Image 1 (cartoon, rainbow over the protein chains, first blue to last red):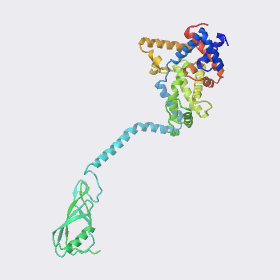
Image 2: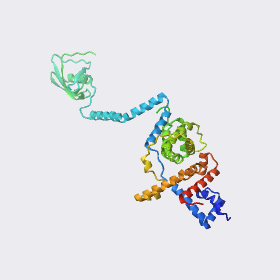
Image 3: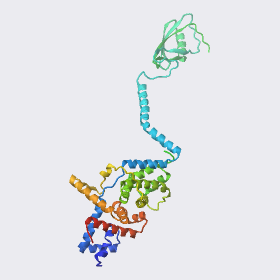
Image 4: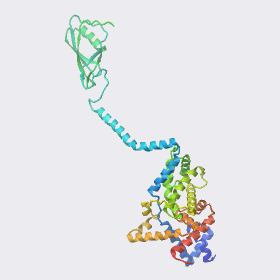
Length: 216
Length: 207
């Protein structure tokens, strides 16, 4: 049990690291309780350890770190295709952000432009952009329409979808039978709506009918 | 880019856990550039520090560091997880540093010293920071560190490597034995001798 200092000191290093077996641990600990010299030796080992652990870590310089990255990258991309892809990646990456920003900006600008009232472009066949056009007759309904000798002049109110909303006879006979046939004829006729800057809108059209006999 | 593709594993910037380590090794073996970049980020500073304690100076340490990572790149295909990745990397680093030291040819190219090296990260937290309260204390600490470095550098090689791996890198006896390819008993005896030599140099004792 009472080992000499020389024997105990062989195990101080392991004792310090806690890597000593249980029996030996007990004997070293017991020895240290009464041997001041060995206790001082143990404290010195601990001081030395603390000194070593307080040494600042030497760090890789940014230049060396970059060189390492480049060296490894070259090793990883040794074939021609792989190198070309890396080159392409390096060349395109800096452009990616500005290009994406540009495209996004253009889309946003276009969307804002389209949302301004009157600025939208609608495809109406034959519409003249940036000009006002009246409603036009595309096709009259194929119905018999005995108007007699007198000319019949109507003012029609055509909506933006090309449908006649109402009309009024401003010249000519307007018997109930005639108006009834006129109703049917206008209902089944096709109109192109009026446009303002290419955008369909409501409008009025003056129609003159004379001796029309249409057979289906 | 290129032929190497990642398999969708994201690693935190720290020494990887066991599960993560297997994924990292798989990525490295697949030739993933991201995995190698991660490996560099985690290990370049500790390996540089370790190698610096074994070879002569920062220029040599820089050369060895490059060789170490090239060897890791070349050898990772043959790594089958018999030891931990850390142990394997440290083994390469120690062997490379010892080989470099044994050689007679020294590269003359000098490595630019990082400003980080002038203001390095203290290893041990608050105690070390408190010493820097005044310029005098800072100078005193720098002087003390220089003495410790010189004492460590003067140790014979086998003892020095073991002391560095244990005291500075914090490896266990078993890990050190794996890194050096020696028995644990040898590690214990070298560590004891190394500590004793350092104690004599730093505490001025002559037994």
